[in-house]
Amino acid sequence: MVVVMAPDATDEDVAHVVARVEAVGGEAFVSKGVERTIIGLVGDLESFHHLNLRTLRGVADVHRISDPYKLVSRQHHAERSTVWVGREGAQVPIGPDTFTFIAGPCAVETAEQTLEAARMARSAGATLLRGGAFKPRTSPYAFQGLGVEGLRILAAVGEATGLPVVTEVVDARDVDVVAEHADMLQAAPATWPTRACCRPSARRAGPCCSSAA
Image: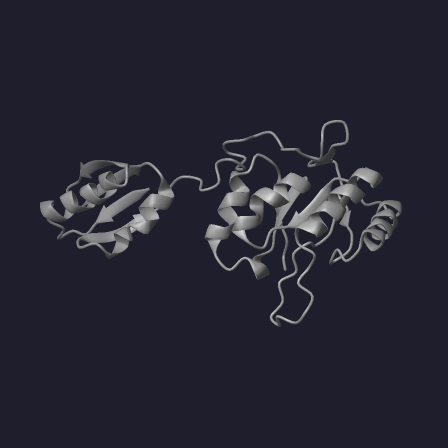
């Protein structure tokens, strides 16, 4: 990231920017030209964004010059990735030259219903079983899902049919219990109101997926 100072920026303005960057663990390299001063930043870009550097006195502009997605960018990771879902010996690949079909009941209601849906999904070509154990609704009187019991049903049906299980996490406090029963965690933007809810799933040692709704 590069901070471009305004032509009338003072040494104090430059020093203030440097101090703010260093306060969040970054490094700032000052380069003074004939007309302008440029400050090159090295460190965590997310931390720099929270500083709102453009609003500081004497700052003319801020440019992001590095690729923001290093883990998946072709610039930093030339090989195509394959994600394996499921327990050892029954894993399903998601990646190059594969077509992954995920299917199952919207909501897990009973063991019988879930098993029947899983068998239908598998016969139609599905390689992953998806079902909802937590179903948050606006009305407190509506069906809210079976919760942990639904997770147990999903795990048992997945074992019986040989299909790895995908299910949604709707509360950050449920990440651990969902991960105990599912092979892949699903994050749906419609039911995840804040970014903070997504981080516990991302920290889990296992695959995660996102749905459009």
